Amino acid sequence: MRELVNLENLWKVYPVGPGVRALMGVNLRITEGEYVAIMGPSGSGKSTLLNLLGCLDRPTGGRYLLGDQDVSTLSDNQLSEVRNRRIGFVFQSFNLIQQLTVIENIEVPLFYSGLPRRLRHPRSREMADLVGLTDRLFHRPAELSGGQQQRVAVARALANDPLILLADEPTGNLDTHTSTEIMVLFDELHSRGRTIIMVTHETHVAVHAQRTIHMRDGEIESDTRNRD
Image 1: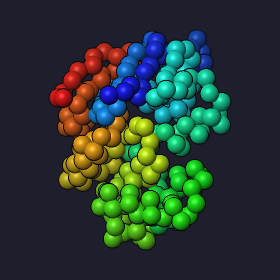
Image 2: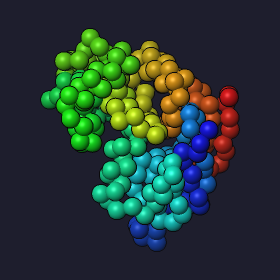
Image 3: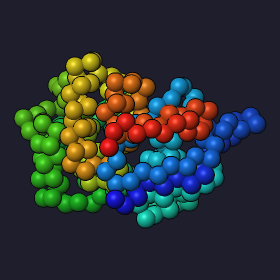
């Protein structure tokens, strides 16, 4: 399997007072098809790490190779392009556009990629079918349950066929039953070869991953394999 993520001595220091060291020399490699959970207490650096993995921020030092591309020193426009084409995001709060229907929400990243509508529409239908929302295409978010909204968010994240799928507390706003349904969906995506990196504080969610990384004080405290 090829290496999709390679972090080399990654640092992130926020210029607050003497400087807040959020990440301190992190080294991490993730290969294609891996399913990784990132855990840690508040302030451990896990959210900073996810932001850097998602090209939402730049490291203060070190290198980040995403696939065959060094994204550490890209311009804002270049980072935006990488985010749209190579990274899929699933957020705790869904982040759907309330005025748009399910299929229109899924189409958003395809629109920004410049894909013509005649291609956007069938691709969005395919993604809706993948997450079990074929019968909800023309509903708006307010007409959906929390679990259905998160399924839309997953479909949207996958629309551009990204290298990695990043999930930030994907079950944080869901009840136990719905959380289980969403994790079954993530398991199915992983079984199809999708590379997933997920931040969670819930152990029963993290056990779905093959590998669990624990962060503390800006460093990787442990990196354990749950299963192959």
